[in-house]
Amino acid sequence: MLLLECNDLSFSYHTHTGEIPVIKSVSFRIQKGEFVSIVGPSGCGKSTLLGLLTGILSPEEGEIKIHYKQEGTQSFYGYMLQQDHLLEWYDIWDNVCLGPKINHCLDTDCKEYLHTLLTRYQLDAFAHKKPSQLSGGMRQRAALIRTLAMKPELLYLDEPFSALDYQNRLNAADDIGKIIQKEGKTAVLVTHDIGEAISLSSRVLVLSRRPSTIIKEFVLPFQNTGLSSLEIRNLPDFSTYFNLIWKELNTT
Ligand code: ADP
Ligand code: MG
Picture 1 (cartoon, rainbow, N blue to C red):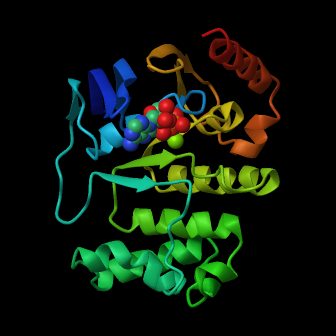
Picture 2 (picture 1 turned 180 degrees about the horizontal axis):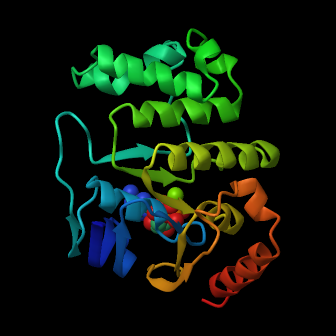
Picture 3 (picture 1 turned 180 degrees about the vertical axis):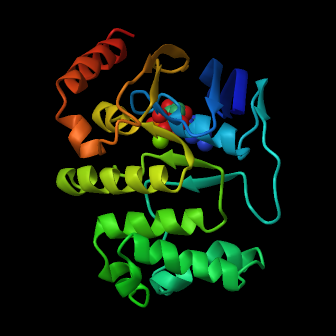
């Protein structure tokens, strides 16, 4: 089922020193249940592209079509960033309740849902701790649960693991991948990390340098095999795809 389509998106920043073309004729479609990664070099326009998808920025050309019927207080998308933006003066419970509270829908069902998520993803014992008492990986899980609170259909993830060191990054990506799969969400991840993209996604779109356009699409066979992202990293085919994508990124 088609959830989202972008047709011929273009965008430039206008600064006092001139125009910076960032996104050029980008088109793609996202089906319900897919995990799509968009990889590209730093500064190519990945965050800008998510800005367009979330409506924070408006495209100069092209259009974004959303094929989704909103129900109740459910939001179409949730947005997760590199910094977890957990509020230090709140405990984890108050942090994950923030969205529903602001939207006046923190009812018994919602609280129960959030309790279930915290328990399911090993954070229930930390509900009344402050964010600074949690590890980086746990904070990212808490940030994801906060994002899931409004029951979004689609998750936008902007390099959510890049602030973590290597070991924690692998584990956090593995955890987040499992949560997204178990909760049956559709996800669009932007990252400059090829391994992260391959180990989590059913499809990878490769962006060129600025002005960014999609230069290649890879459909990956690893999702729905029951393997975790850590296990996928150990498959022989993982490095085959890694090299293919690496080559694409380095020849543009
Ligand atoms: P990425 O997320 O891929 O690293 P960004 O989307 O953040 O890239 O930025 C793409 C390009 O646009 C970069 O060259 C960046 O310097 C520039 N840029 C980002 N935000 C602004 C802005 N608000 N004004 C002007 N230029 C910007
Ligand atoms: Mg960015």
